[in-house]
Image (cartoon, rainbow, N blue to C red; front, top):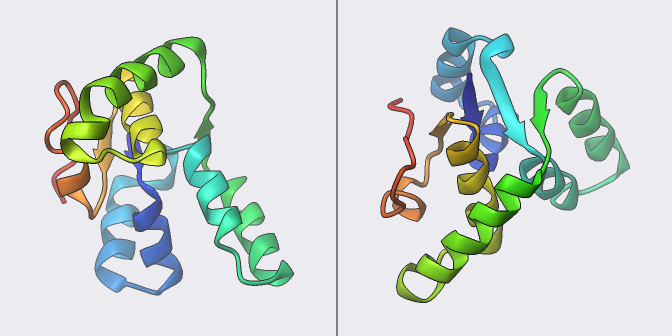
Length: 124
């Protein structure tokens, strides 16, 4: 299973054929998203129709919720990287999910994660 970052889902909505093909090759059954990605997508919806499309699409994916181990790792990541690397709260939560669930993270923004010890970035 691969944890997919928010920017990958956004690129699918933008009809980025390279990303769409890569995700197809991974297989929908092998894709997971963090609940943080779900909320970021919902927050970014421009209207009710877009929100409904997002909600329908998210039902097709495995959504990983925040559990206590992820919350603990999130706090550790913020403590270690927020000042030194400007790690954002959503990115820290997504990284904590990837680390705690032993999943590679598929993202277009590798610079936002590369410095995190123990994270595995999916090679696209």
